[in-house]
Image (cartoon, rainbow, N blue to C red; front, side, top):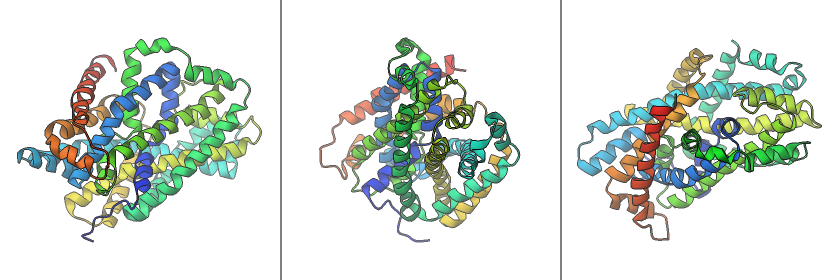
Length: 435
């Protein structure tokens, strides 16, 4: 193995890769579904507040922890304890918690991305467009043969990750992320001309503001913001460990938050007005993307082209997220067992393929458990390490590296007393009131 650490080669290579980890099924499928479930504009407002009040500081913290330690979760938590108190044996054990959560996410995510890949092939070949019954077509897709597509999904992802940080992860994100935004803008423009689309815009931007007074709206908005921004004590720590000291962490974090939020809003602008235009059900879970949208594409001019554009964009977003999820596991294997990247990728892809195939058909409710309970817990854990355990001077010094403007102590104050405290309060509400 080379002793030279593989790093992102440019500022925007790092930003687009971190944004790519955030922009995935959470932004395209889960976000519009939550908007439909929790009152349209109310959820959108609460989500944006959570992103920029809590999510942004958490992104800054996790990237800082990764770059300061130069390690993923196992090494980062261990080194943080060594810096703060000299006792570090528990650090690696703590690091396994977010790595395990990410592995569980990877299993469900690989299955859903396999659905997207299969639907993309069907859209390109025409079978998805000409299918008379979209429900039957979707059920056929998620049947026994999906194991083949799960394996292919993981093989494609593994092939990209083998290239390393600069030549694999960064190179793919620099291409896929701009194309994703261009394709979704084209879809948003097309949907705007559908009859009745105005009702979708009203729902998204002005409806049911009373839901702002519902605790569930804020709890799920917080979980959605953490999930969409990849704040889970793992992904951003790993990507932060690949960032150069010359990178401005605050500037990068702001751009990641903006791009992730923009992707969620674009997805909503493409899906929600179309659903309203055709009188479909927003609160329809997986079928929103795989049944409702294909049915809509079948009835509009240039529908086959729109369907192809839609699933290409979704696949690009999904695969960049899956890359970041699996990279956490791969980095952990390289750190723990001192193995090569190639061997770590092979082991990860084989194990993930086996367990994803076994988990197929058993992922109902997994998103809620992860989003409401496990992801916020891991986010809180990394926040405690960055803003409470590590010496504040070390954290400020790390954030200052690469930034021309002076970093003030208020960032530690917000991290400690706003981010950590509010997450604790909301997490207690999660345990007491959200089932």
